[in-house]
Structure formats: structure tokens, C-alpha cells
Length: 312
Image (tube, rainbow, N blue to C red; front, side, top):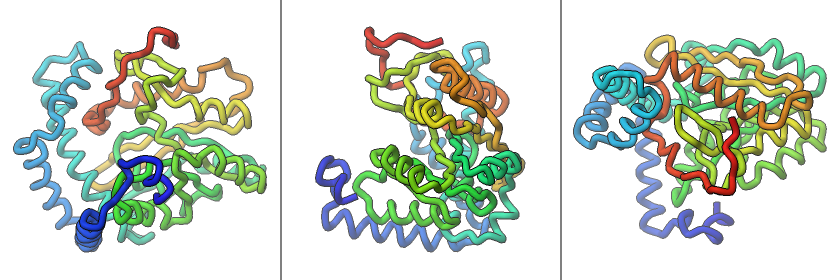
């Protein structure tokens, strides 16, 4: 983080800001100790303020929904948005709660399927790639490290200007044994583990917004959008099997995760096929369960440069 702060002022943290951040993070820790029935009560109140008082990114949410589902009437879009905000409030308190949850609590609230094939590759000494999306509760999925044999490498963007929150989130994500790798170190870290012969599961929430000049653009939910091409390049170069992380909400605060084989022999597929397959899989899941996608994200904020082709 200090390295980033020297290069980018957005990561700088002054004295007053640092101490305020510590106080807020300390409060979040205390909140994480509360039982779920209290937390979901807080979530209900939070939902009211986020949705109706502060109207958090309401324009962004409805703009995204109208483009994604032009065939749906306005009242149906409002219903999806209402459910989205309720889920977003739950997601906030669930993410805080993760910091203090133990193995017994996690086992009651999240389960995994598809690990048999994943473990087969581990026994063969082969690393894999897991492509995730911001749908349902992706933070709790770090618990897969408690079930799988691969060393999980979770690629993430460091928190800007808040070292206390950075430590809080890293503890939540790494407590089961995985390693969080800053996106600017992801290439070097992946190669280092590969050279050591350690089978890894490289986890990426690959639906985040890359820079405008990204080379891969395609249509995602009826709009042109860029995607990081790194996952496909790594898969093609190493022939690491690619899995898709599908998360389903089965009840409030309870999820089921299925690791779906996407491309088991990446070297045999055509260029761009992996990313296109990932995007189409996301669209399929969002169509079935739209209220649990992160609609408040400004995913389509860039315009495609004229010199970069659209891949379809």
C-alpha cells in the first residue's frame, strides 16, 4: 500500500484520515460480532435509507436495468431494483460479518459443488482459473479454500486511501488460507507459484471495469463493454482449465456455489472464445436472477475507441 501511495495520490492517507479510518474499522469489527438476527434488522433499516432516503446511485441502477432488459415494463424494472437494494443491504452486513465468522457458521450458510473435478486437477499437479462475477455474495466464496486443495490466489484492487479497511478486508478474505494478490502484482505472483510447482486456483472477478483502451470489447447486456484479457491470455499460455463460479441465493444469508467447467482445454479454443463464453454465461445467470447482480456498478462508463474492434 505504501508503494501505491507514492505512485498514486488516491492511495495516500493523511494523519487525521488514518485515525478516522481506524475508528470506523474498529466499529465494523464490533458490528461483525453481532448475531445474524440483529444484523438483518440493521440491513432492513439500511435498505430503507440507501434506497429511499439517499437513493444510492438510483439513476445508475435504472439506466443499467433499462439497457439490460429493454423488453421489460417499467413496473417490473422497479420491482427488480427494489429487490436489488434489499439484497445490497444484506450483502453489506454479510461482508462485515465475514470478518468474525468461524468455520461452523460458514458451513451452515454456504456450500460448494463441483469440487470433485477441481480436486482431480490438483492431484495431477495442475493449476486452474476461476472466473467469478459480482452476483449474490462473492466475498463469502473465499471459504472455498477451506474445502478445496488448490492454493487460492484472489486478485483484487487495493482499497484507496484506507489502510485499516485494507487490513480488515484482507483478514476476511485470507482467513481460510488463500492469498490476496493486488492486481498490479498478479502476473509476477502467478508465475512465481507456477515455477515453484504449487497448484493454484487463480480467482478473478473478471466483470470489473478495465481501462478504456482495453483491447477486448464485446456486447454485454446489450451494451458495448471492455473486459480484461489477462484471464484468457493466462489460460491459453498455460492450458489451465477455466471454471466459472456460479453463486445462488437459497435463503437470506445462505448461498450455494457451483464451480462450473467452462473450458477444460484452453489451448484448443479459438482466440477470444474464453472471454466470450464467460460473458454469455454471466448474461444467462443474470437473466434468471437479475435482482442479485451489482446494478449500482458503473460498468458501462467507457466508450469504445474507434481503433479497437468489437468482438462478437
